[in-house]
Length: 84
Image (tube, rainbow, N blue to C red; front, top):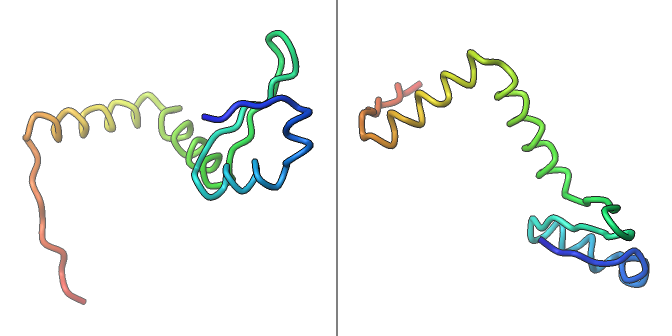
């Protein structure tokens, strides 16, 4: 995670934006006490929105938690894909 001030961000905006996009960084621009913004790539934003959507339903959350538990306990299996 990167942090900077608004003044420094203005001076080198291209560098900061390139860093966010190319290195999947999150940038926090401070604007004083308890004030600021977060800059992230569109890819990261879309991923965050998809995760929030998946976890918004209690049923989906339970299914995901169950799948994670099965993987962690070694209680999972693989299937071969059919050739088309």
